[in-house]
Image (tube, rainbow, N blue to C red; front, side, top):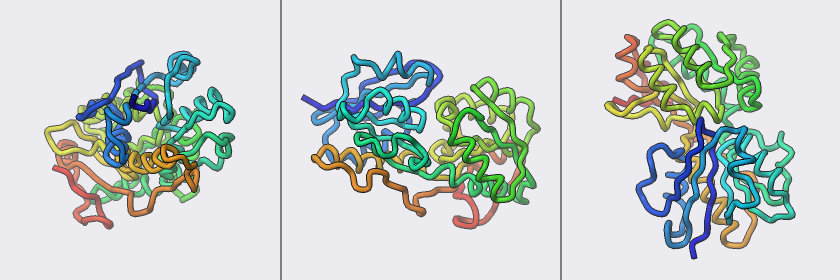
Amino acid sequence: MPQTIVAVAIGQANRQVTISALPIPGWVRRYINGFVAAFPHNLGTDYVIDYRQCPAAQLGASVFTNQLQADYIICMSTPVVRQAAQAYLAATQMPIIGMVSRPQDEAFSNQANVCGVSAGRSGDAHHAYRRLLDTVHPHLGTATVLNDPNHSPSQDSLADIHHAGHHPNVINVSNPDDVAQAINAANTGTGMLLLPVDWMFGAAPAIIGGASTANVLDFWFVSDWVQANPAPSAFGGYGVPQETCGRYLAQQVDAIWNGAWPNPAWLSVQHHDRVWKASQTRAANANVQLNPNNPPAGPAKVP
């Protein structure tokens, strides 16, 4: 009988799908694409993925319950790992594998059944902000940053930007409606950095659609959503793609699968995994020019 890997992300509404064969549904976080590609076991035969998205406030009631059937739990953000670690203490021996920017700051970092991967997103914040400015030619003088003051990776990212000497316009947001309001109030061609907040990732399709309509230059901490026309594309992004992170998650789960706890328990991505991308179509629609240089001095250009 296949083992069950429960994969959990924050989303606007409750959604669930059992993944036992390719292709993976397009609405599923790209972590899963990378995981399946790198995991050296047979999807559908050796394991299935019970993929779930729900609002953060519903994790306890909808996912992390006594009825959950799981051999492993993959958590795709720090707040999800926190709730999973509280629901399944070390004594349960439930393996929890999470994506966490700064695991050393978390109470669960030494919990015996919790491990994972750090993409270092909050530490990349000043680099992401600088690359947003430099994606446009001539470069932008400043940009707007969307920050969730109740989300620690977001606050850590904002502090990193300020520590580097940048002074962007900061708008605090708590939900997708706040983001839509900020986009609709912005001028055409405004650079807008969305800090690494799980619910923003969950609302990415709607946010990207709104920014595209308003010709606001939305810039993300992942490059997965910078896609060739005619697919809906973000304007740009810098960081470790979710798909690449999924490959690291596969390494951690495979170690447990084979009877050993991962060493190190918290695996950090490599510097060369970071990708800088921008959409030529989105730039043209907003009447801005992209930095003509190729990586690493400029973004990779997507039609």
